[in-house]
Length: 376
Image (cartoon, rainbow, N blue to C red):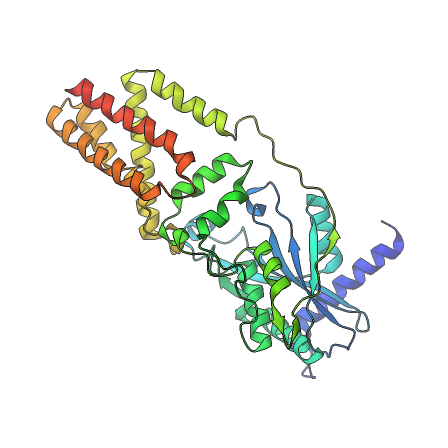
């Protein structure tokens, strides 16, 4: 990095600090944007880390006459928050908006090897000023904090709300109307991330099976902006790729179908009673966890989780009575789980995760049958 670049980066940081504390330092009128100011929506490509699988959305405000080039970024959180894991699981962890210099923001995504797209909003200077002031007001108040919701309140939905509020109506809406559910929209994002795909398939409840009617993912917003109209013209100019990096597919020796099927085959073929009971115990414990999370968590995506029909807590009772050699209770619990498995099959047969869940369903059903036979 040469001296000129370093000086520019330092200047951007100084401008960001000034913007953050403008309201505290002076009672003057808000800093006016010039007619050359631009407001853009930045869409960042997906990555291979779990937090980056869906991409990211941010707002850029640049004004060469005022030496402003700032990116407002919804989606920050503090790892040092007391009881961080518990708050994240419950769904009351506070996220907040931050402002970064444009150069810092871009450097971060270049370092992560993720492309960035920019769409300049074709709006009047007064509307740009309104967005600018609203964002800075938010930074100075408790409004900068918000409770994250995976579908309803995230980095993309917050940006949509900011722009729509400044425009005075819901200009940015779902433009690709289809019968696709949230689950089927999300599913392809887990390609090459098998266990993340499996995990979200079994921990999400009925919320993600609803019709995907809102813009909640970064690239959905990018596509919606292409079709959104405002004052008889396109709301956004065509997308420009300001960071162009070819994506690299994740490669893992273990995070794939092969280890999944291999593990299930070992469980199926290794007919030791201890192995079968351990597997069913694990399924039952996961069922208790899913049931607890559906009741405890404020994340609506985790509520009403029908996967407890497969990860059935009563499997723990089945294991208990099998160990106690109580034939009658074992048989009844086995029949009960068979009914649950049949209902579960009817529920998921037309859903995206059906293929990925079927081997697990088949092996669990087989083991319940074997336990019934051995205890008969």
